[in-house]
Image 1 (cartoon, helix red, strand yellow):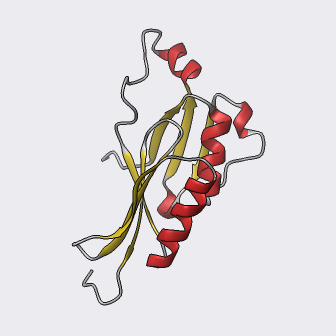
Image 2 (cartoon, rainbow, N blue to C red; image 1 turned 180 degrees about the vertical axis):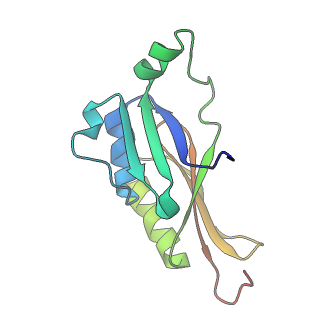
Length: 134
């Protein structure tokens, strides 16, 4: 048997705020998930995004402390078009989330932007530019 990639786990400093952010990106968490110490949303291809509260992590690792300088991972979300990159970025920034990198046409042929989730993890938004080889 070979281990297989199954889930991405993030530690949330505020479950309700984190779940609200990822719901804005279209992820579906069960009703009431924001009240729980652990929540999961299904991702394409059968993967899952798992959020755990800091308190639940400390139950397993009492000495655990959050990183001093924001997140250490990024999630990349493929958008349907360059215009969608722009609109999702503007919607999130307009809702008060931190825009780390405004949308731009990257040299590698994508419209690209980065928004930080409530815990400082990068969420990359991208879409192929028209005519770009993929």
